[in-house]
Length: 385
Image (cartoon, rainbow, N blue to C red; front, side, top):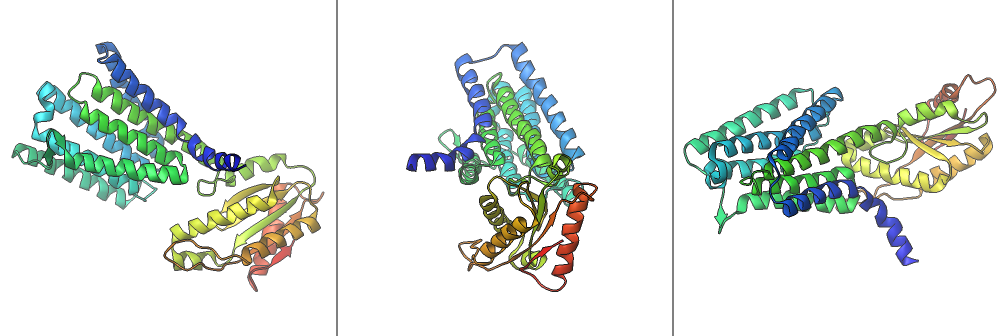
């Protein structure tokens, strides 16, 4: 029984590791077993890297996403500069001060952009970041021309570079194991690939194959995430607004709709912050999912969940909504180990599909109107449309 519970808990967390781990392992073993690839094979990796980078750029700019974009830009610039140094110095590249500085700048930027929270690319913050990047690489070039190194060596190892890459790998590993998100696993294995690319840059094909793997891992995450977020809510993992709009066309002729709204959502956000409120929102979604079992839950807005009861009439839906409301009202939510648990409430409204309703939009509209009328006067209640 304990084994079953353990597997049930950890298998979903491990599943997101499989794809990036397979790509990384395949590339690593191919490099170690094959040794040096032929020029034609290395060229395939080289041009594929540029193709994947261009594809990622187009996708991210189209969807106005910045968080993975800057991480991938850092990988791209690192690849360009390493190839430039490799063409200039050949196998002596690792003895140059230019390499020393670049092997410090790359992991530093990767670590920074791993924590970079701004989601939208088009904005003044992105302009500032791009200016800072240009200045950073200009300073690196200036230091190289004057023979000044950012590295600190012990034996033949660049300790600063190892510490920065190691910190990034350890942090992403801890977060990946704890949360099981594909983003953290992708960052983990992409970082390992970049680190190996920097280390084996004096070999004919080391840079190409390892940086190719890094960009491929990130591109796969990017495509998966865009598809996933189109149908699912990224925070809670339940169906999102788009899924509701698509699936509502196929709802049965008879069903009941239940809106669950977190009371005083904006005040909570101002009080405890968005990150902690996100933690609580995930807890609430888990409670709802546990209580509705076979019925379907959607996160329709930041503070609102919609539940579709396909076998309940309005009376039964009202009872279930009340059960959820009382359950949440009776709990204390510990969103941080350093803060006291807080009490919060939710309000609900239910509406049953009628023959006169044109479609799911009409059912949702009636439930939403009932909710808004009630919230003008009180909270922690369930209303009927």
